[in-house]
Length: 291
Image (cartoon, rainbow, N blue to C red; front, side, top):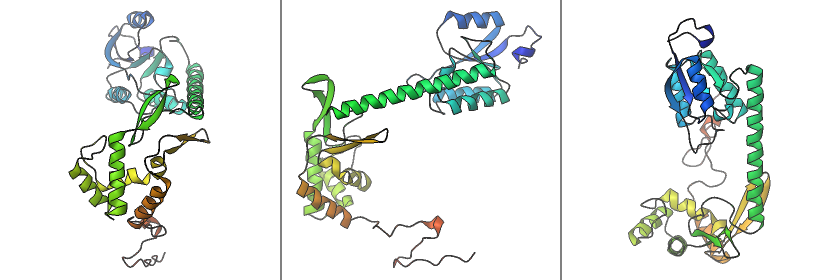
């Protein structure tokens, strides 16, 4: 391992771990300093605010193994867009004897880097707020705001604005939901039994090969969705989002009653072992141990 660049007195090339960014200034700096390039680290399509990213984790493993003296970034925001993560990353790399160098400002001191981290954090917060405002505006206008549609619906372009989306009934999935409700409400089957029946009839879930008790109960418990109503919660606001109802209001009440009757955990009978709130099978509380 070569000495730290600031203390180097040997012509031996330095090891260099760098984030893969385009630009002649990076190559010029590597050439001028006589560094040896030993790795590229790049996380496309992953939020820079995350504290753990595949190539970022690999970079730190690389540095912890003593394989790099310098991390060269095209911009400090490429390291992280979160203030706390940026400072933590910088501190850990400094403890490892690894220097972080910004290509745009290679002579930046600690204070200059801190201001850059703060600016990146602020910019990310502004982007997040603007994104939330856009999502809320789309929902208020009556369109589908963001994400995939719940089971039973599908997303299509809005007839009055092709750039916006609305939800419509997914015929096959809606038929599966109605059949499941028929099994649970009319035939009084448990969710486990209804799941087995649905699998046998070929009414399958969207993203897996078979229904089970948990997946079916999760779909049926989202009862407000079955009535074609969603609540979008963003930035402390609640905005109703509506679509076509799969079942009627009366059928919804019947489903809720049936689901409550087959629930394994009743209200007031939840078990919290770490707080001493443990119950016997007869539902009598176990006495707390003496201190």
